[in-house]
Image (cartoon, rainbow, N blue to C red; front, side, top):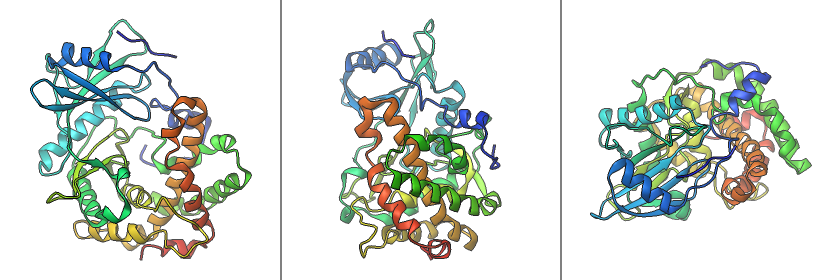
Length: 364
C-alpha cells in the first residue's frame, strides 16, 4: 500500500548517548501517505468507512477520519524509526490517564478489528510502520488563537491534573533516552553546526554554559513519567466552552524525567511569539498565569521554581538545535519544523541578557 524511505540520571555527553538521543524517528525519512491510503487503512484495520483529511505533523502521518456514520477519529501511522516499545509507552500512558482521570480531555485509544491498539502494517516491509486510531477531540489548536483569547490559568490547571494522573504510571520503556528531554541537552552539542547565524551560535554556547551550571540541581529534582510536550500544537481549546482546554494530544514525547522539566516545557510554550528582546515586554508574563493555575492543584518546591526558568531556556536551545538540524534533513517540511524556532532566538537573547540570578527569579 505504501513504501518507506530510508536513564533517569543525567550523564555526560558521549557519541553513544548522542546517537540514542537523536533516534526515535527524528532522522528517519519516509514516503508520505495520501488520503486514499488513510481511508484504505481505516477500512481494512478498523472497519470504518469515511473521508480523510491530512494534518501537518513533525515526523509521522496523521489524518482526521470523518466516518460515514458522523463520528470523527484520528488515524496515526508511525514513523519507521519509532520502535514498538515507544509506541506501546504512548498508548499505555493515554489509557492510564483515561482510567486514573477520566475527566481529563485525553483521546481514547481505539482497538482494531483484531483488538490491537498498535497495528503493524505491511508485515513483510522493513522498516515497519504501524497504525493507531484515537477518538477525535473537537476544538481549535492553541497555536491558532491570539494570546488574548488564551486561558493560561486553565492550561496550568490541566497540566497539574495530568501530571498527578500520570504519577502512578509505570512502563518498561519509561526511562528511554529522548532528544526532547532537556536533561540530555549536553548531548546535542554536535548539532551546533546546523545553526548558520554566528550570533545564534553564540547564544547556543551561552545556553550550554548556563545549563551546565544548573545540572547538579536538576539531578536532585523529583521525577516521574510526564507528557513532556505541553506545547501550543498539542493543546486543543474551546474559547466559548465551559472549559477552555478541550483536548490534550500527542503523547509522543512521554518519558520519565524531572517534574520541573515538564512544567518548564509548558512555561516556554507560553512565551509570546511576537517578541523583541530589547523591548519592554516581560517574557514570563503569560507563563506566570499558567504557573498560578498549576499551583492551585500541585506543589513545586522553591528549588524547582528557581530551576524552571533555566529549564525553559534549555528547551528553547534544544528546540533551536533540533529543528535547525531537522530542517536540513527534511527541507520539504521546513516551514512546519521551524514554525516556533525563529521567535525562539529572541527568547534566548532575552534570557542571555540577564544574569543567572535574574533568570532564577523570573517566575517568582
